[in-house]
Every structure is written in structure tokens, then in C-alpha cells.
Length: 79
Image (cartoon, rainbow, N blue to C red; front, side, top):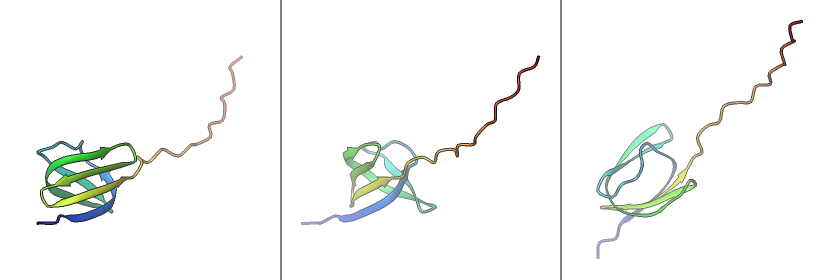
């Protein structure tokens, strides 16, 4: 029996997961291109679990960065 490798990563998907296509993962500034996806086990806003030809992945999804809140002073009304 051929056991698959396990990979647990923290990053983001560059494009949506699709069976039959490679996954593109951005992880620690590196772009990772997997072998062909054969099954998607879980795809939520928090994690993606999927299987490729040779590896089972758990990708802990990083939230998209939010812009910093900058306080804005109200403008005076013209008389």
C-alpha cells in the first residue's frame, strides 16, 4: 500500500480549488504548486483540506489583511 505524505501549511489559495487541477498556495512568501487535486475534503473560510496524487494537505487559511482604521476629523460646515 502506498501511503501519501501529509502536509500542514498556513497560507492562502491563489485560486479556488478544483478537482483535476493543481492547487496554487501562497505560504510564507513562497508560491507552492501541487500535483493534481484528486479530492477536496473541506473548503471553508478557515481551512482547506484536500488530497493530491501524492499528498494530503491541510491548509490553514490566513485572513485577508484588513486596512487600518484611520480616524477622520469631521469637516466644518460652510456658513
